Length: 342
Image 1: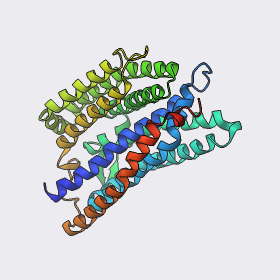
Image 2: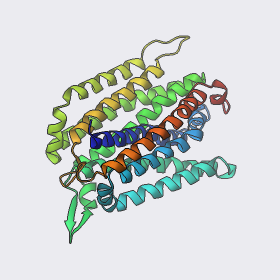
Image 3: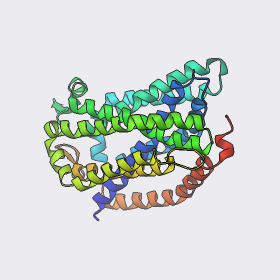
Image 4: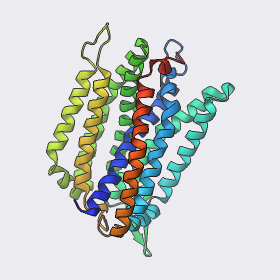
């Protein structure tokens, strides 16, 4: 594996991990807002218990992604920074608003509900803007005006291809978060909240699959080069679809003690599903970072700098990984913590 391939693999790995964690985090904020007036269920409390520690961990990977882009592909970072100035600024503003209101919603009791609404709505909108980075890299939305790459925002927001990505982002956010919260509710032994989130996952799963199909259909006409590349990895897409079926089956299988479904199996199979599709998409996208001018080769840093940076990343990963494992075991398996607000 060459240095440049190793670098883009590390970067794509960070992006994928952040995408999965962020969608679950943002979706939990939406569910907390949606069920806040439903006094017959603890669904909002379950979502809040998930949100409390995870949004700080998720932000770690935001930093990792940005640092990886600027350290591994500095030339590409300049173009990305120029093109993504407007959507990137909107994303940062929404993240700041959401984070601030999320903190205050747990401190100022008199404003708990309105602050939860602001947090939930912003968390619902952020994935829609984040996903727009992908169609931008497919080409057709960046024009060079007087030597400066400029994003054609109007063209982007009216593109069927970009709109299909937005549908996929929103539906996937709600699907993955409801799936994880179903598992969270089962650990808490809250059957009513579990059935609510299991139902939501069963509804939103097919919607996310529809969004993925629309992406492929529109890609054929708006990014033919990428569509042709993904056809070379069609087996990975079929495997991803098979894991989607496994997730659906996991939610309807009879469980123990009167519980329907195996949500932990569903969470694992959904993660594998998105990982397989992400691999096919990432491989098909190579060698372009932004089609057709910015590639991984012409945006790559100096090889000596890369090796030093890569060693630093390995050391950092070795230090942080045990902490993430401990966090997962403490957070997702500690019934006392999960039940503490029930």
